[in-house]
Length: 83
Image (cartoon, rainbow, N blue to C red; front, side):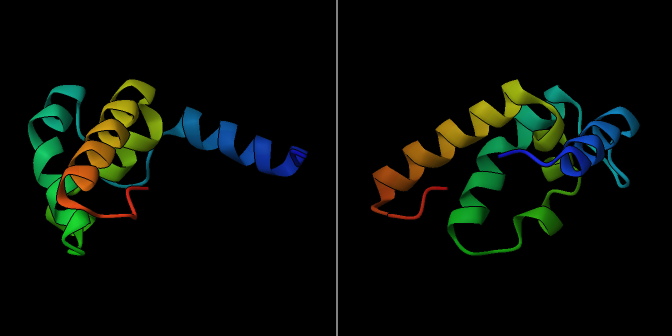
């Protein structure tokens, strides 16, 4: 069940955009492999690629690419936690 207050905050965040830096789709695509590798290695991928998380939160297409690549690389490497 969805809460109206939560939905309103989510809509407001989408309208206002991220508080910090955000990558473009092109920059995201260029850094996608690195971000996924760092994530699976347990490193702080958000610190290494500033703006990636903000971009993925606001761009469904890039988020889907990220999730697909994460699942593929994790499966190939034998990781069970590809989420």
